[in-house]
Length: 204
Image (cartoon, rainbow, N blue to C red; front, side, top):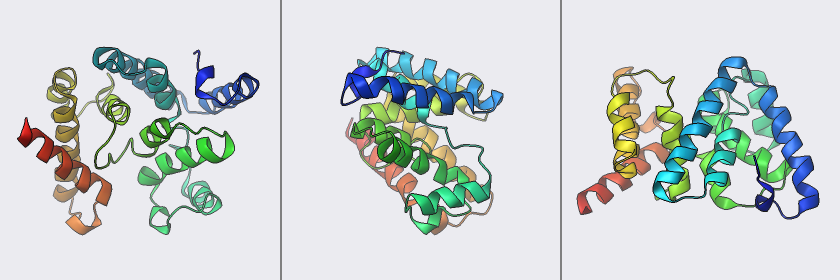
């Protein structure tokens, strides 16, 4: 994957790409397959919407580097990077934040759109960029995803990406409510992202 223009210099590019490849090979087979599917989906969406395909692929490749780590390692990394304590014992929400911190602090990635796409790929956030939406929805609809409503979201993703993101966010919120999660315990970024996109859809 030709990504050198993402970095500050050609001299940095090779060593950083090598680190990225090392992280990728450390993923479980299941996680590598998932990531490859997300990369492919992100590239297709980027091409469809006229976004930077290389950035989309790069963010997609990095999004789950810390998914699957055990709680002890996750908590250690949260403390290492000085992330909020609310992420302790919550790998589902923490892994994207850790990946973003790793890219920024350890690899020197400065492209804020890439960093945000990795950081918020699980929760979404208010006023996401197109790149963020692409990585968010690619993660939600890659071919191995199987859950109620996914086919409708897949269809919407190539017609109206805002609508697709809203459908995914509302599905997550409804699922959390159904399993007994109180509304104030649902991540604020998810709530705010859904609220923002509802307003966007009403204005169309």
